[in-house]
Length: 199
View 1 (cartoon, rainbow, N blue to C red):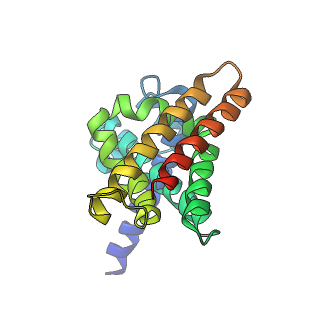
View 2: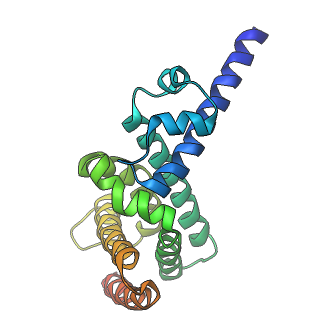
View 3: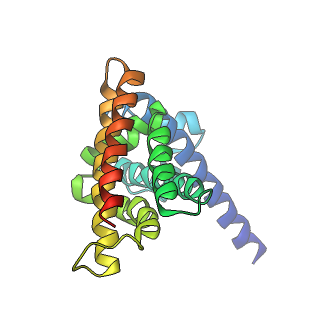
């Protein structure tokens, strides 16, 4: 029993190490240029250990993206928790999303590459699980006419996140990211004003 538990703990540690090193490599080099030979060298594990935990590089990339999605959802939920009104929570979540995506590693992996590498559908599955779910919990009281509470919150969450993802891409690829962020913030604010007035 103790031997089995020790092996499981060692396996989990190896997997965490691989994910951590892969995350740094994907952020630095991008998916296409991140070589598995370099990854196992950096992580100080064998190639056999890599393929024991992950079928291929794409599966490892998906695991890294899911880790980052989970962290992003936690950050935007923490920002929302500091406010008691819907408008305050929603604005705080949008700011937290854009703040997180201003980190070059997050921008490269989540904003610019994940929808391409995982396919749009594959990336949407993860975004739905983490980002959309986080926004839906804030939007349940903002109900569109003729829609159920769940339908309305889901639709609004996806519309807002579509705008946020595009905004993050605009900032990440702009010659002057700071100036782009000012314009993006103003645009998101107008979008939220419209949604909240329609409440």
